[in-house]
Every structure is written in structure tokens, then in C-alpha cells.
Length: 542
Image 1: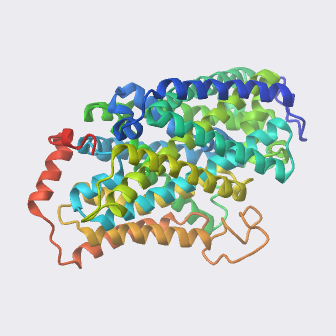
Image 2: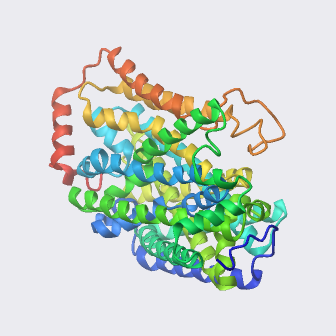
Image 3: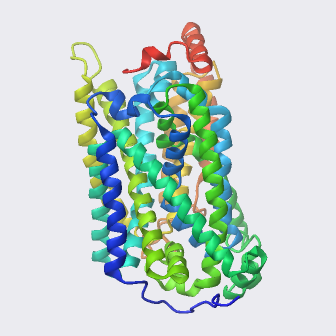
């Protein structure tokens, strides 16, 4: 298997000028797509839902584009390259969660005909505090997810341009934030969706080409590739089996269970994924969207197995960890080893476009939630207040985009250097605990009421955030965000094993201890709408 010897030492990756030129070209192309596809975004239906004009396959590919983030491409490949089998568990967890979305979430959500998760809950519960809680949860999940994408951007561009100084990497994160703001301000949901479609197609094609190239170096034999990966890894053959990262102790085993819960259950609670179901005209198209997304995402995660082990075999774990971006640099280093500066530039450009597209999708979701759920429906709602016009909602949403962009830049600078797949797993934990219990109870439990929703959302959100803050993910470990201090008392890096069951329990306890039995007529109307879509046309333009 000629050419699979690991380098064993870090090296200069390509030519910075050529690297920059290739991915700058991709960025310009995506910006042109966003601007040209946007059209007029004067109404909320256009800006938030793209006019509900996308077909199932278009929206499915766009969902794949939203979901296949920098964590999928850079983070998972890096974890597999270093930890082998345990890293592939991320891919499995990310994919399995879509079965829950397909079976329980996609069709009822689209049948409501609304824009946001808070819209759906308000349709059932008619309680402004619930809408506000859902909006707060949406903003929190979006910011955690943005944190990972910003960290990925800093790692990628630092590797390509040879930027090793912290100031230079911080500048890279700031540039990504500025581009993200421009995407959303100009493109809205329509422009963002077309960017996602193009990006997802190119990303899948790039990963497929690289996978075939890697396997060709191993004689198209996966066992041969795995053997060479084991030979290049300090862990030897242990990299091919479970336990390298999560089987060392009882704590790491619990961490694995916690991570698995977050990954599987978090998908169904991600607000930027849920919002995509409102961009298609019918529930049938929403269901078709998920099927398309599952095929695309499943194929891509199979590619990550070859990409990760290929990076271990060709580049070597030591060289990966020594490069700028550490684990996150595995895929670009593999591309350089295979195809030189041209393939490196293309793959890195695709990864960078991935980051820009995902942060654009997250940002428009967060901005929509604030403008539509908090500003229009809580702050400006009430007696004696003039109703909010659609143009005003869009204007507030755009202002929110700028604010969120600035916050994301600051958080991205703080998180620079962290493994982005791990950071995304934290966002999934928040989504699973704060959103999923309330979504499922609202859709399938007629007794569920306002107190149950508030206890579940705030209980899940607060417990997850508190446990993350006092976990080894933030302090007390070499890989923590703040490695120089130690205030960690919660032993697990991912809090899902505690916060997710707690949120489900709080939803039940809050509901059963409340005298509110709900409005039987309203509950019946909500059930009919989620099952059939009858009445949803009234919600368009809501």
C-alpha cells in the first residue's frame, strides 16, 4: 500500500495564497447565489419560510446542508482519526435521530402551518410565557451551535493560511461572523436555502471523491485501510474497537451514554431543522424532505468512516494533533496528502462554505424566533398596542441578525481550538432537554398544559446550561475552554443523561400538579390540524 506511511510530523499545508484563492472563489459563488435567489423579502412568509415554495427533494437536500455542518465534516473525521471506533459513534448518533424526526415530528409540525416551534406550542397552549420560553430555548441552542461553527472556521482558515497566532485566528472568526450577517440580511430563508442546496451537493460529492481516492490507495479494501490506520495509531489495534475514548472508566462510559442520548434525541429538538418543515407547501412534502435528508446524511456519515481512518493511515494522529486546529484539521490534511494543494483547496473551500451556510441557517432561525415570538407576540402584544406589521417584523429580524452575529463572534473566539463535534453535542443536549419533551407532550398528550411546558423547557434548559458550566468541558481539564482554572464539580462532559430525563419528568410533574385541565375544544382543534393540516392555510402569513 504505497504512500500510506504517516508523516509523523506537522508540515506546511499547501500554498496559502492559492488556498485562499480557491476558497474565496467558493465564498463569492455562494454569496452570488444568496443574493440572486433571495428576490424580494418584504413579507414574513418570504423572509421566514421562503414563500413555502420548496419541493420535498429541494428541502431535503437543504436540511442535509443545515445538518451536515463543520462538526460532521471536520470534527467527526478528526475524532475517528484519533479515537477510531468511538469517534464513529458520533456519526451513528447524528443519523439515528432522524428516524424520530420522520416518525413523530415532521408531518405534524408542517400541518400546523406556522413559522417557529413557539408558534406550534402557542397554537395549542395559547400562553405568551410558553412562547417566550420557546424563543429563549431556540436562541440558546442556536448560539451553542454557532459556537461550534465559529470554532471550526477558525481552525480551518488558520490551517490553510498558516495563521498560528491567537490574534490572527480571532480575526478569522470575526470575518466569518461578518459574512454570516451579510448572507442572512440579504438572502433571507430563500437565499439561505439555495445556498444550503448547492453546498450540500458539493459537500457530498467532495466527500465521495475523497473516500474513493482513499480506498484506492488501499486497493479498495476497507480492512486494508483499517490495518494501516491501526499501524499508524499510537493506540494500535485498539483504535478499531470500542473503548478508546469512552471505555476507560465508569465516568467515560456514562459520558458515552449521555452523549448518545443527546445526539439521538437532540436532532428532533433543533430549531433550525424544525423551521425547515415550514418551507414546503404540504405535510407530504415535509415527510419527503426527511426521507431525502436521511439518504444524504446517511451516505455522508459512511464517508466519514473512510475519511477518519484514511487520515489516521495517511497523515498520522501525531501530525494531525500538531497541526493548527488539531483534530479539526484531519480532513484538510488528508486532502492535501491525496491530491496536493488543489484537492486541499477544494475540500477546504467546501468546508468553509459549509460553515458559512450553516451559521446563516442558524442565524435566521434565531432572528426569526426573536422578532416573531418575542418582539411581535410578547413585547408588542397587548391592549392598546398597535399590531406589528410584516415589514416591521422583518426589520427587527434583521437587526437581531447583527446582534446575534456579534455575540457569535465573541463566543467563537472563546471556543477556538475545541473539537467542534463535541461542541455541537452540547448544543444537541440543550435541544434534547429544553425542546424535545415539550414538543412531544404538546403533540401527543392532551392533558399537557402551560405549567408542564414551562417547567419542562426552563428546567431542561437551566439544568443543561448549569451542568455544562460546571463540567470538564468548561474548566478543570487540558481540553477545556478555560484550562487554567478549575471550578468543575459535575464529572461528565455532556449532561444529557441527567438533564434530558429531568426535563421529561418536570413536564409530567408540572402538568399533573396544575389545576389547568386545558381547553378540550382547543385541544381537539390542534389534534385535527396536526394530523390532517385542516386550518393550516389560515396560519400562512401569521
